[in-house]
Image 1 (tube, helix red, strand yellow):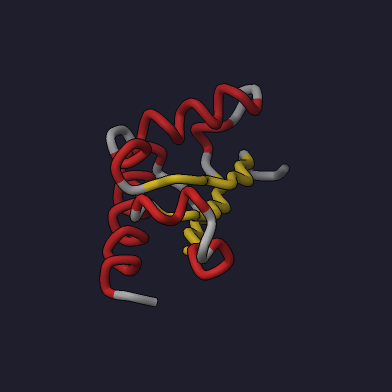
Image 2 (cartoon, one colour):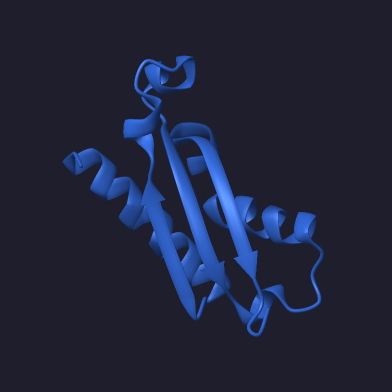
Length: 92
């Protein structure tokens, strides 16, 4: 993984930890799976996020996704082309 990709993963993790205080968090750079893809040409990355957070308790799936997008803010436009999310509350 390139230094730029490591930096992006770290920034994504930090933003999610700060906003959503997850008990479990894994951010996976899947950019290598999308080499040559039109979205990869603009320099933004493809990521998969697996997260468990109390903040998701009682939230519908769409609300959970919106919370993640809000936490990532501008990175959704500058650093992230595609984001696959698996979001759970504890015990789910």
